[in-house]
Image 1 (cartoon, rainbow, N blue to C red):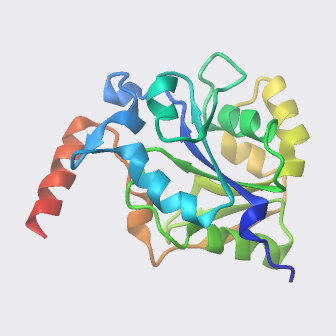
Image 2: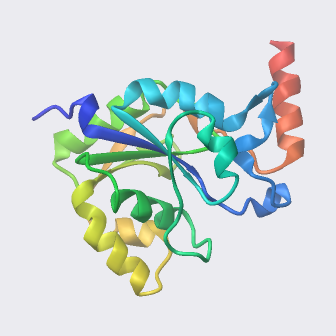
Image 3: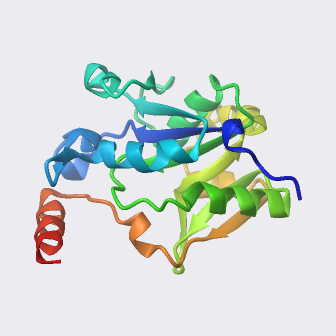
Length: 201
């Protein structure tokens, strides 16, 4: 099994969604314990990869303050995480891409190593995190060679990420020991509850 090196991996934070359940607010820039959600992900993901990118479709100036390249979706209809992944794969030069959403402040420091091990161990095209209950498709690693497939899939009008995964060799990365990694926020109420719980600890 050939180890995947850190410098061969680009990390991408997916912040390009509409966030309808957040009333359209840009989730990555919403404060959690006085810090934007995206900053937590930056701090945890960037040491795990050779290069970091933020996928955002608005508020580019705000995201640019963190010093990383900003890539927008090439498709203009907010058609889900695959659009962001495709746009990034079209531009990166590293052989691997790891993605995580912008609203996952408890991301595991083991995410990339777990995804890398699973991919290398099974010689897969894609590796995806599993939290012990189900796969978490936006926490994944893709080979750069998936770029043609993902673009053709989107060009056909397809949008479902799990359906695209089914077309390829997928390895499962067991992150069931880190279930908090996949905690995200879909409402202001959830954020308030999480902050209150954090203060009680």
